[in-house]
Image 1 (cartoon, rainbow, N blue to C red):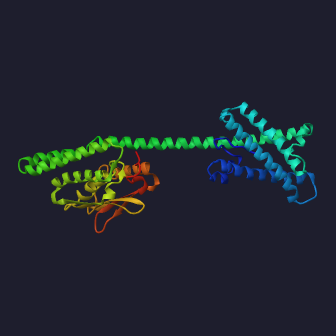
Image 2 (image 1 turned 90 degrees about the horizontal axis):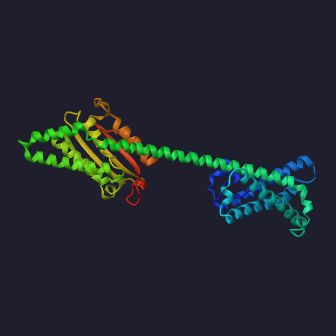
Image 3 (image 1 turned 180 degrees about the vertical axis):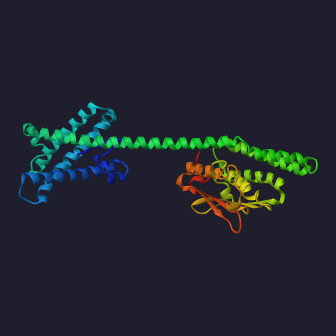
Length: 386
């Protein structure tokens, strides 16, 4: 004895966690109605045998009750679904006392009709035999009202639970969206500020080279302009390709190579598929900056930075490996570790639990920062996270 709306509404069995594992649909609710009818029949049969003390087995008493329960249940199901369709969903939109009166009335009528038709079929009489003798149904009115009220209360409890879960899900989505917007706002703020020491050191080096090594000063200034242009583009974009991020890192490292000389060497290893991957902007730059500031600069003889990118079957794997001072040997610096912590939070916000940030210590020296992004979220044929 239940119903479903034209929009595949809730079912009394949705109150039981086991039955919430399957998504709502018309077919599911039809099957659930049969299960619900059977449970009602078991309860009524058990109650009847307990209080009436009739002879016979449980099955002998259960079968006729089960038949009548299914007639009533599917009649309620079909009637309310049909009325909801014919009335263009109006019964589903009314609230308060009107909705209670509507549902209790319809369900009560269906209970009376179901009992009459079920008993007639069991006794081999025409289906509408008892309907022609309406006075015989009068004693059943209290029972019909009681069953209608019970079903209505159960169904309203299920609807309320679904409404609460929907509200909680929407609030969680809003919180997650707000967190992502905050992370992106912080990124925009960081992108809008060029690292002062990098800016000042670069300009100072250009000035120092103009007179003695003009070609070198020109090269440094050109690559610095390339870096600024790429940074500005990234700061305004919602997504980028890994190739563009690698080009930005190359421009940054080229500028530093002029200043650091033989203390800085770098290589980029990425095939065409990896370079075409679509990722959020400025994911790679903080890692490269960390490798220089905390790895190579503290080391007297410097070292090498290797950027690798490839698809490993399930992820886009990005690595920034250096032969610098390493985690334990690098002296503490202001802001040390903050960039990677922010990056970890940003990855979680953009790509969820499928993204990973791993820190690996290299032998004999240096470290590797490895980023794993779900392949389905960075493939060129899909839309990347905003």
